[in-house]
Amino acid sequence: MEGDNLVCNFKKCRKSLTNVAFVTACSHVLCDEHGTREFGKATTCPACQTDLSNKFEIVRNNLQPSEQYKSMILAGLKPDVICEIASRAHAFWAYQSYQEKTYQEYTASKSKERCTEIEQYYEQIVSKTTTELNTLKTQLSASKKDVEDTKKKLNEISDKLQERNRQHQKLQSLYDAMRRKFITTSTFEAKENVRDGDHDFVFNPRIGSLDGDPPANHVQKRFSVGLCTPRQ
Image 1 (tube, rainbow, N blue to C red):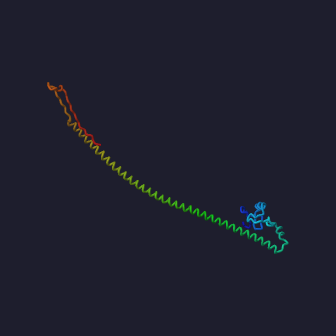
Image 2: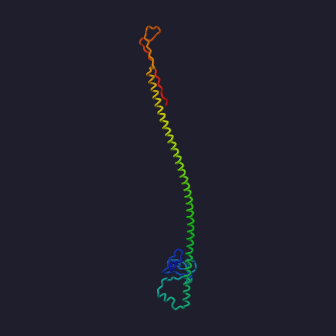
């Protein structure tokens, strides 16, 4: 039921009934559209499949009767008949209320089951995601540690390289100083040798020699200067 109105018992409709409805002896009610269509094909209740072939087992009622209709429909009937009619009408409403309650409980149960399934599904997803997140955090921590270790090793290598460069520069400076000193000393010794006359001149005038001496005024010059090349 929807508020104070009945709802169509056709399983695919459930429309609120306010004007015209088909009422059956099996206590079901259908909207005008589905009642006309279903009962036009067969006198079987589409809600419970009950046979409704007898007279007055299917009635099309106006749910908004006029005041004159209300005044005349039960007029002249005995009070016990009126009470019986009212009792049966009340029983119809009670059954519709029970049926609606049962339907709503069924719907709520299905919705709850569906919610439970969805909750379990997302709990699994959350659990899986949490596990993956923890794994990624562990991997990230390990990667950070590796990066720190690599930076530390790089700094150590950089310090060693700087120290080697300083040693190399020191050795290069010492080598250049020794090379300059050695070249200066060698050059000075060579100049001293030249200055001291490290050379011979032989002058043999021809005085009638019989042993084949060279002609007169021949000059033989021997000159030798020793230069030392510095080692690299």
